[in-house]
Length: 378
Ligand SMILES: Cc1cc2nc3c(=O)[nH]c(=O)nc-3n(C[C@H](O)[C@H](O)[C@H](O)COP(=O)(O)OP(=O)(O)OC[C@H]3O[C@@H](n4cnc5c(N)ncnc54)[C@H](O)[C@@H]3O)c2cc1C
Image 1: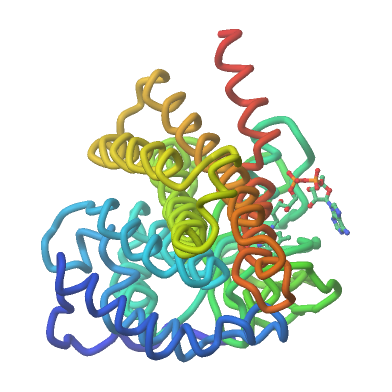
Image 2: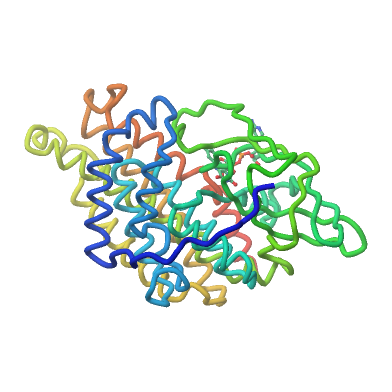
């Protein structure tokens, strides 16, 4: 069993504000951009880039216990994800996966994980993600929960299969929810390590995009999850507390992707504006919509624990808008860049495939519309 043994020794606090964003832009330019095509076409998993981003403070901005400012700065976390996603949304998605793995611990009452695991995840020393697609669909009445567990005195013995979990490798961490059998039947959430006995990572699929995201099927065969690693029990109040942050944090990949698409359209203006002016979703129009969306998201980020249904509805709508704008912006980039955008290594066609990921990753467009529909009926 891989145990959490040591916390990161306290180092100098990473940069904040514009200094942080400049540092992230440097990492994107120098470390990430030479790898973007390899990540997309060869499924290369950029672990070193993720660690470099983590050391720069990319994963700690939304964590008051880790960012040195004591505040939930979701906007800064999103800005980092946005900058990275403009170049490579696969990496932007892994930032989200890492951000929410941290969020799960930060939102819990588990002092052991806060002390021992969170500093490692927040600094990128340990990597990880989230297995919450299935539970979120379960909560929304879309499918059953795939993991079940037997409770012992000090652990849960977990069995079941999950099809696709990202930002994984040997010794990585992820948040997972399982149904506990017995008289005290209930759902429990815990942090799980991929190296624990009985847990197998299987690469069963090849995706048309997002191939470099370290995405695996997980097969649990009597995996012992110690109670020391529980983050949510009782689950519902915990999920309620962290849900808005979980969803809002996804919007950084959307805004970055949209910005990247607009930049592609803008780049060809000097050469093609005489004919591109006949297209829909011109770059200036898309930029106006993007800036409006960024402002609306920033406003929502200032109160992530608001339990008012109207607030939750607006968060879901913002996430939906992000997906819809991604699809429009990527379609626009394809048409604005023409045949050059259709080349196999062209950013426009890569961004089109990334945009569809924003639309299908949980909560997918259809899932969001189902939840919004249910809220409208209340
Ligand atoms: C590249 C990639 C990375 C992902 N990373 C994560 C992650 O890190 N964490 C996470 O929790 N989820 C992850 N997912 C899952 C994702 O969030 C969605 O759940 C998934 O895309 C399906 O969503 P949907 O609502 O469109 O369901 P639908 O496509 O409508 O499918 C309905 C259900 O059937 C299941 N299903 C469909 N096809 C298969 C199959 N071939 N094998 C097994 N089950 C299947 C789906 O999982 C889903 O539960 C990832 C998916 C992809 C493609």
